[in-house]
Image (cartoon, rainbow, N blue to C red; front, side, top):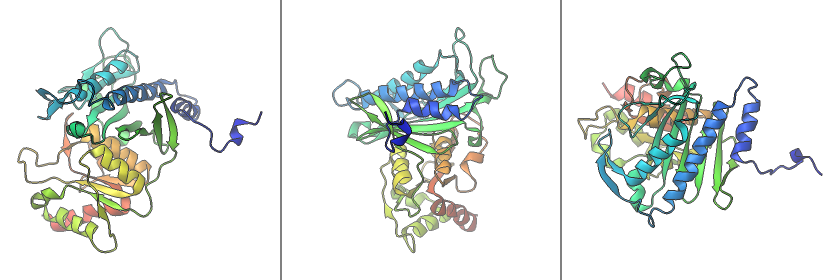
Length: 341
């Protein structure tokens, strides 16, 4: 029998990959590995519903609104509850936070409390569900700040992105992919539906050196600041020669730019006086994707500072977001500084 190391194209399941990564940390107890595997399982369960959305009673709105003031889709509720129920009893978490919930989520008293904190956007882009556009799940994992053993607190959730120990997303599209990092590169797995298993398909992802796209909703151009307007014009012209691609689903836009090369922009605008500081959530969207972007050689900023350095002050804090190819993304800070007084 040939040694398995002789095969250049060996099949690597997500479980095998997580275990191989764990071997590099002899001190690890396996809690993070198990937590990541539970999130992969949640991704499979949510994927099983997204592909049946037009056939099952899952499409459409519940009629309720979440803390963001957005209409809750039925699949939002399923995704939120799936992630919670897979993680509330394992003894690996101190607490959780969901983009769909007003407050942080304590672990029930009857279950042991662990050393990690899980923050998640259960179904990003869910307004696109009814029109069959790709949606996704985003997750962020931190070490708790409070002493071990006791219940988690809000303080455990309000950590800057530079403290992340793992982050990732699952994108539900023509195929289902899980992309994640623990600070040791970015790896992507594609779900083989016949096997019911995620297989390593994109090891050590790096943003392409030559970017192709910029992604922004140009309908909001009249409401942008002078600095953002000059920056976007720079993306459109000169040596960049970028094509505009905008899906309107953050995970889908980010995923395309991660693999094909580009930058995504969601600036603050003056259209909604209630949200002058941006729309995307720092803890549930911006920070975890920023961690992935930097691990893939990219950069993320709010137009003034690195996303991973922002100290959060509330669970549902919103920020502008510019994220992607570093040479395309970082210059927005110069344009904002020069043109915005």
